[in-house]
Image 1 (cartoon, rainbow, N blue to C red):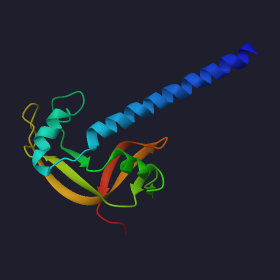
Image 2 (image 1 turned 90 degrees about the vertical axis):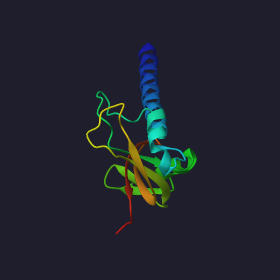
Image 3 (image 1 turned 180 degrees about the vertical axis):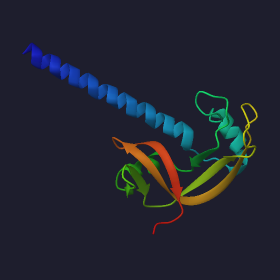
Image 4 (image 1 turned 60 degrees about the horizontal axis):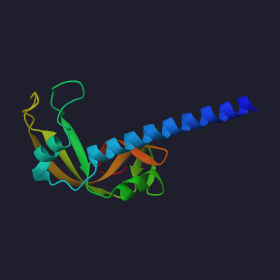
Length: 144
């Protein structure tokens, strides 16, 4: 009986750790990619969200995409509003408003990162885990 209880306890701890990992990745996805961002405010948004540098360096991040929709609408892509795409990804069945912020001054180093924004309406490809978006892969112009 003790072995059974210990096994259930270990299994529960494993599931909780996995859920915590997905929750953290989902929160990171939201902070990096979700929100109504004007194409004229890329510098401010990239800076305030601390997205200007590549992790572990002072090199400026080349690009970041913001999805102008609610978290619920984006999350629905991981369910009925999405379809498998390219193996491990899910694509949206409907287009989304996005703003792509691109580095203007190539080879710049933090704190001199400057961004130019472009607004589009595009389908998006994301990675989902346990029903939550955890990674933005790319925007898609159209399907063949």
